[in-house]
Image (cartoon, rainbow over all chains, first blue to last red; front, side, top):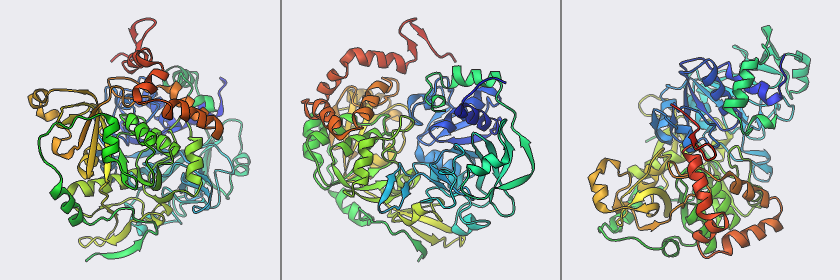
Length: 256
Length: 337
């Protein structure tokens, strides 16, 4: 098996989830690298959308910003914030791909503050477009390292909605029906959500890890999917494309 | 009448009454007049202490960086800031401690470059009153203002703490009975938008994504346009479909070449990552950052002075090549269709 770091592993595992022909609203950071890798590997017709207005660019260089000129280089349209978010709100966008400082068992995300909002231990950027994407897109994908400080019983602040406090809560709050969290990709596993309870469950475990490893690095009890599978390890081809074509400057993968 | 189901606890920094906005716009000048003035004068004349300020572009992309510098250099205070997709603009304005109220969608971060240590210190200092929103929520607030109505509905934010700390309301739709989040209009006192080209009257056009600038231009009570270059009115009239901002929205036109540096200006120059990194590194310690600010912002007369410190035309030419993905060593295009 080739050598790779944890960020490379996460980005590669995440990229495989996006199928060809789907539409995805992509946030900054690792989600961008994963979407680009999917586009270059198996999903050439993946429609990547950026909140600032880029639609289906040719991503020959990694955008540093989700609104820089590379985010709409040779794209089909250089649009705007309202058009992108309203495409999502209309139900035209299958996935969103997000990061986040904290996540809970229902997939609620915090990127606003650590600690109390009034007197935070750390002030973070806030929602940006994350709440919008997480409210509107059909399925939410999250990429984040498996770490008990990130996977917490209760997030300090629900910036972006997961399943809120359980089944039916999104609809009750007024969010679009049948939308919600889909997968969380970490450096140890791919997690999904139990159909009935909407709680996070382990579905696929990466090479070299066990369910116990994942649980140990998670601040709440995880459910087990009926059939937990082994994640196929990164291939030489995936690593090569990721390192040479997606992120040659190491903006994302050198953080691993 | 809508049935209000829930209400955010956050403060409203701007009255959403559409008739008050109409009363302002009734008196706004419509004359086809030459509005070209130096940036220094435009900021002095149109950006006042206490104003609600909005900056166009997307953080470090087609952002009126030169105008942000000038606002800091002129030591504006007590502004309210519209923290919509803000990154380098927030970083600069926080460095000058220019605002004490902020509607937040995205602040402090500079995307994958990291978080601004100084903007974070300022935001955690207790000197700024915050209200939480999202990028689309703030876009809707501008869109409502641009439409001349006091609010617009959206299906986001409900059920989250972002809602709780916003000044939005959740109400039942009178047609379907479903819940919607209602966002109050915001008419910024003053905004600055950087574009590629404008004529002397303020007819303006830019390339690339519009982000929220079409709405912003129409929502703003006063609007300063900074442009890469002035063009003749004949050129605007030759291709009216290209005009995105008509002159009667505009109060001042300032020709500021490279005015979005060290940010990216599509088709002109890519972002200067070294300069943006220098900002982040200088910010780590307050003392080193003060030195940086004294040298790069307060120690120069104008934006040209800053550009010179950063390498001037030589550096810009490198960034031009980078924008067009031309490898200056091999003279080859890096990307092919």
